Length: 397
Image (cartoon, rainbow, N blue to C red; front, side, top):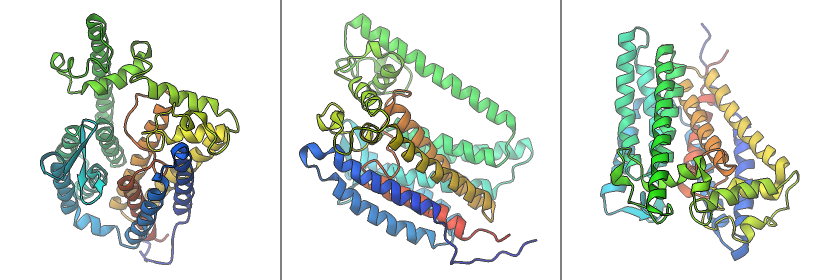
């Protein structure tokens, strides 16, 4: 059996290089997205990135095994923060959603919750035996109970996009733990049923709008009492805008989607040049979202297909490296942590870019290291710091 040796001088350079490149690109294009009115979001992004780098280094130099010991405390802390958002005076509501805590600066506990789900999932699977049907069912019961609580609290904010990230993380960790193939076949079937229910409910919503002669924005709150599907009407608007754009007022909920697609398509091969993208500069791509949820649209318009490929390649290298780190971890816990990090980034990147090019409904999932956002930036750095810790304390072959 190979001897385990901790060589603290070893440090993976691939991930931090990708992070630095992506964060730099993000700062430049956040500036570009707000260039029309001299916005200063790019300055705060620099500050948050510096804080993220500090957090990254601190986490990467701590043996990740300590998270196994304190996984339940981390999980309990995340649940407490989510509860405070909903039921404490510190909870902040913006545009009908209660997702922030006012701690001197508005922070989003949902990012802590995603991190805690990765840790608690890895902890449960590391401490459990997965073999017989009975053992597998016990593990699934523990995972379901642990994940359901944060999932429900996030849905209540409401933040459907962030809530849907969690099942993918759990699914990836369970897959790596060699659970029965029957479980995964059943999960895929249930997911297909879930998607079908959402689609049917959305088309009924469309029929309701047509019958009442209303546009989606005018009908907000009116269809909810008629449906047993726990969605807000504004969420149905986004799904409807994807499934049936013709039913959506182009000047209303469908505007963001259409302008985003135009931004990406108009970039052509080489783009229009930095700060020369018409969609963001002229305000067609809404100024409130161009520098965060739709930052990829700005990049695609101004750097074109080639610039987009560079960004996608950096993301691919970052995710691939996390998977490589998972494969070299010294134990099961390290493998599941790094895999959870890779999964979370994959879901964020796929969903965000897919929505900007019209392949998925619009959600509030930001793009790692590119979208403006303090809590999300620091959270991404911490997650990658965990992967770095798994690499630094890996086994020696």
